[in-house]
Amino acid sequence: MPAASTPLPLLDHRLLVVSGKGGAGKTTLTATLALWAARGGRRVMVVEMGPKTQVPNLLNPGHAEVGYEGAEILPGLHVMRADPFAALAEYLEIRIGMRPVVERLLEFEGFRQLMQAAPGWRELITLGKVWHLEQMREAGAPRYDLLLVDAPATGHGVRFLDVPRVVASALRSGPLRANSLRVEALIADPARTLLLPVALAEELPVRETVELVERARDGLSIHVDRLVLNAVEPAPFPTERNDLDERLASLPGDLQVQGLPPMATLSACARHLRRRHELNQHYATKLSHATGLPTIQLPYLAGGVRGPESLEKLLEPLAEVAE
Ligand SMILES: Nc1ncnc2c1ncn2[C@@H]1O[C@H](COP(=O)(O)OP(=O)(O)OP(=O)(O)O)[C@@H](O)[C@H]1O
Ligand SMILES: [Mg+2]
Image 1 (spheres, protein in one colour):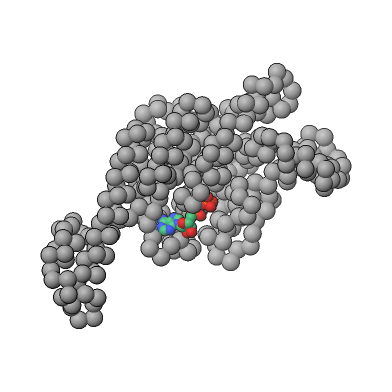
Image 2: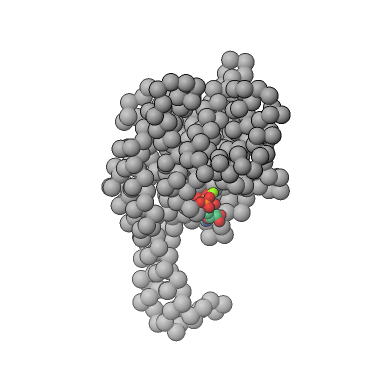
């Protein structure tokens, strides 16, 4: 097991749990990491926890939705949706056999309602499936080198990692306790598992990420040693022209160069870009100081994230700093 001060290269983990606030870029980051890992020859499984899969269409535009059974959407790159009821059916079938009985039970509305209300089982069963994927072997080697979990938005996202520990500590014996202990051992192993928080470099997301890291350190056993800041405004001007906005502002506002808007408009745009960049850097520094962790910055893509070409643009800075 490596010392805490020498972080494992990102892709050398067996399980990366990408977590963050709604809209922070979890799915985008997960898809980019998956692409990077698969290109390097790793066998990857992306586990999406939302109601619908997004990664297949992002990486392979036009690819159909993927269910619990999963699909290989690019060579070596698999995606599945962690549907808790499908995972429960699989679990019950392994434990008690009799698939028709299990299916009847799961179709029974009263049972579904009961299960909807019961706390914790979804998380436990989903993480159990992740554990199972991690354990799978083919010809003596792991079936998947890397599992990427696109976790639910923060709050719920961290709690779900805590469920195995809570269940294991509440039970004295039995298969459920044994399962929970196995899952907990995977989550708590820094040589295999890393929590990778992703945030926007803005006030509220940064505050929430500091809380997430504190929670991971205090209450959870999952390792966290770096953070991702997504959609960071890149430095707007080349270094030798880094006062461009001020230069533009010093020119007469009504000056107009042929084919361009008035100088006042150009200078306002330039100032806006610089402020946005500086604000993002301010929060990046704040986050680093508050957590003591390094940050990986991914650039803001003005055209949005539209498909593989966009992910390419994120992959480059990620691969440069994230080794
Ligand atoms: N670096 C970026 N530059 C520009 N747009 C981005 C960037 N990263 C993500 N986006 C866009 O921001 C939106 C949210 O990204 P994404 O879906 O990856 O976030 P999420 O954390 O998975 O959201 P949710 O909590 O809803 O699952 C998407 O429209 C995505 O295209
Ligand atoms: Mg998402």
